[in-house]
Amino acid sequence: MHEGLAHFFLVGGILTTTKFRIQTAILRKHADFGYEAALNEFFESVLQGVTRHVVFKVVRCLVIASPGFRKDQFRKYMLEEAEGQPILENKSQILVAHSSLGYKHSLKDVLEDPKIMEMITDTKAAKEVLALKDFNAMLTKAEESRTCYGPKHVEIANEQQAIQTLLITECALQ
Image 1 (tube, helix red, strand yellow):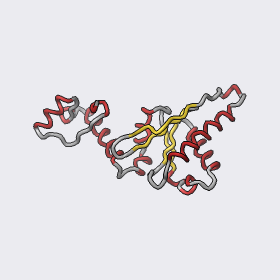
Image 2 (image 1 turned 60 degrees about the horizontal axis):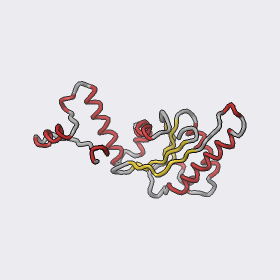
Image 3 (image 1 turned 60 degrees about the vertical axis):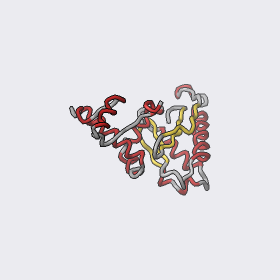
């Protein structure tokens, strides 16, 4: 989440999907006129999204991520306002994490957090994150000969039975 912006992602075994997005205009802090009310209205919208879309019997954990302290403010708000809801029963599954921004590309920051990785360690999503980290590490540590990308190079590696791990991006499927 970010000031007035919240993205909801479902990180699954095979892919990550955007469930929904909430965007609300929040006046600047120094404007004093309605800042707290607008922030509470935004938090309420996000809380409604959580209660509608998060089924704790299915979801392993709920991660609230943001730059700064917004994630902590929202978690506190959520626990105070969620009377008798499954949120209180499952508060140990609600984690906070740092992200650089509140946009989709910041999901990578969240999934690299060791605390988050520990919660999802036996899922395919965690294995994919680790495989991508290994790939990037090989590229930066002068082990380029062990990596290849692009359809032609991967095809050649496949013919030589030299593929240990194959990563496929959404772009490659289109």
